[in-house]
Length: 194
Image (tube, rainbow, N blue to C red; front, side, top):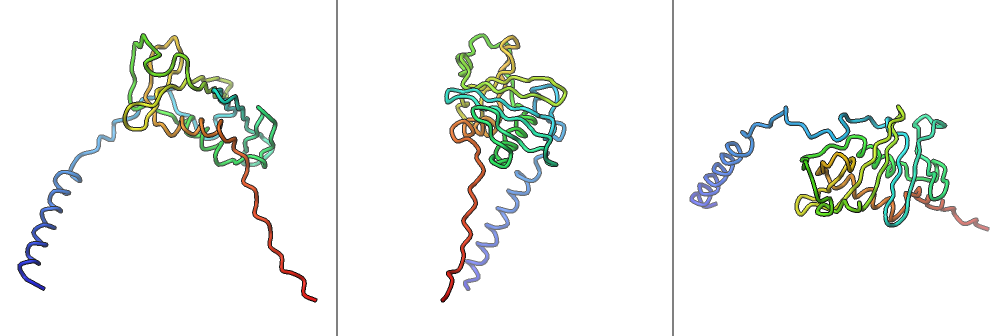
């Protein structure tokens, strides 16, 4: 191998390593920086006992059952489905993300909710917490950048929160394709030989 080429490669790699060290790794992360609490607190996975989603495609309502050890979800609306008929991962994932929902930004004293797609809201979500408290969220448009969404906790509050879009997009997917349990693959049997 050409020694000149080897020297150039070593210099380029050293410069790249120096750049990464100085500009990428040395930036201090502010551990005290926290996301904005939408509900005043975050809830645990099993704190949400009922989830209702109302949108242009219709309405879905789910409730936790105490019949199973894992407190699985059952569908109450538009049709009644037992826990074993639902894709528990999809429903629990949506409920868990909503229970821990925080905002990266809050826009206060909003006078025109239509600017954020919140008048009227695209979806209305109601969470029932295990202590009986009901939390209603109205979801609006996607933000122009960063795949976030606008959320309103109450029209009287007039504060619009910017939240991670995946939490809201899951709700649209639940309405578009209800979370039915996957159909098991058929069991193959060997043919009987004579």
